Length: 274
Image 1 (cartoon, rainbow, N blue to C red):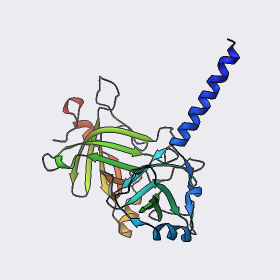
Image 2: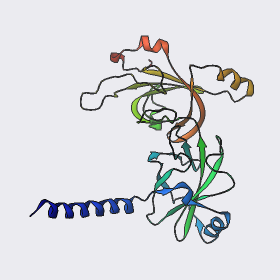
Image 3: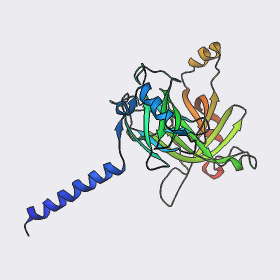
Image 4: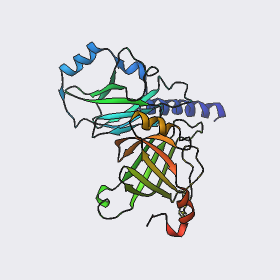
């Protein structure tokens, strides 16, 4: 059999696989999912609200968005260097395979919005619907996950961190790591360790938001008063993030490394702040 005869079936098979992947994982442009108020109301009025109909995953330009189920809110951190950041490719998964997603359009576009403006997103099937808010931010997003049952048992809670650095120009904008977190009133101190993949894991320092690599950081709640905001804006060494704990929104926090922890903690101490 000639090489050409072999290549043709392989090419056809590859094309079919690509079509199947696209069909099973549909991606839509943001603007194509937008509908007007009349269509939105028609969907709602012919269905019953069901909060058990849930978004399991939603991605803009293949970046995972945080879903705050407690407040039915999705958060989109607008990527600084993305060419289609204002009309991203949207892919999603719902706990009902027949459900669809639409966005209520109005006079504002993604390009015009500022932090805390909220769009409306609806997932629906033939009989039911559920509405989420969609908030846009120009800040990085930091989500710290931990077992809430451990909180009352010990001061330092093992955690996992998900950082979406929308301001960075580096290709990998998502950092997943593990460590420990400690709460001090409205502030959180956390350490990072076991960042090296593979069997022989070792403690390692990491750079967050282009700061110097470190192994201990502090999150300080932003003072929402006008005087406090002006004062805190002058602290150039600090960076602001939208903070989530177990996917629940906490507010805007400053993040900074801890100088003295860098000296105190060693790999043998495992960064536990005791």
